[in-house]
Structures are given as structure tokens and as C-alpha cells.
Length: 213
Image (cartoon, rainbow, N blue to C red; front, side, top):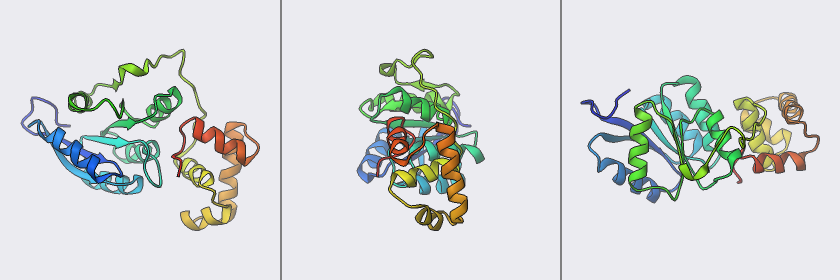
């Protein structure tokens, strides 16, 4: 992985569903000669595909993305490209959101109103193997909310449940059998100790497991 001080610039990928935001980040980052933006994506699924093709050193990832959220996209990317460092940007300061992203493998978490030079330094720190957590979050072991671990597929099913999709709809979208979706739904509810869909939706949103469509 390229690092500050090396001849090769840090290869960065930008993931945000707003083109103007990506343009602003690109301009900000490429003002520093140690950084080069090599790829961009506008949603979670596209981010996974492009990241696995381009293998950037650092991904600057928005949490709230269309389709699959930044945490699930991070999890999928790191399953095949564990050397990539992900910096999550989010409007959410709640500990559950931070913990969910770190559990997915993100090595950094910044609030989206903490940009400017902070973003450049955060990218350099991640490229150097460090972890970066926004100091305003004050995340500690004592206030961290431990949520049961769900698989990438279960999180994908959960996102579609929150989006109001039926088992039949989910099966069609994910190219699974309805029975397989039913098993995933049952496993999710068992893991979270939740017994109805309404409570499941509330829990998933409150704990940052999904993006609100």
C-alpha cells in the first residue's frame, strides 16, 4: 500500500451518491500531491464492483447510500480486498452507527461536517495503517453497543425487509428461492431476539444496520 513519503501516491476511491460532493472531495484530496483519486462510485453495489476491480489503497465511503449502505459495502469489499482501508463518512454520531461500521471493517469514521484538511489527514493516516475516529464521537468501550453479528447476505435481506419488500420480492431481487429468504428472515429474528417485522425494522434503523430508503 502506498503511504505518505513514498514515490507512488495514495490511490483513493470516492463513494457518495451526490456527484457534486464527490467533485468537492476530489478537488480537496488532489490538492495534495501525495493523493490521487483513481475511482468513484454513486451507490453501494457499484462501489463493491469498482473497488474489487481497481483495488484502491483507501476508500472514502459515505454511509447513507442507495441500495446497500456503506457498512455492508465495506464488509463485502474487505472480504475480497482486506488490504484496502475504508474511511466512513456519516451524519450519524450515535455509537451504534459507529460500532456497526467498525465491525464491518472500516478503519476510520468521520462526521460529514468534519471535512476540509481533516479529510486529507485522515486519508494519509489510514494509508499509513492507523485508525481514525472523529474525536467528537468519544467512542469508548463502556458506551459501545454490541449488536449481534449478521452475515452480509442477512444484512442485505434485512435492508430489503426495511424497504417493505415481501419474501417473494426479496427472492426475485436476490435470485434466491422464497424458502431461502424465509430461512434468512427467521435467522435474523432469532439472532436479534426479535419476533415481529415492525420491531425488526425499528431495531435495524435505530442501530444503523440499514439505510432508510
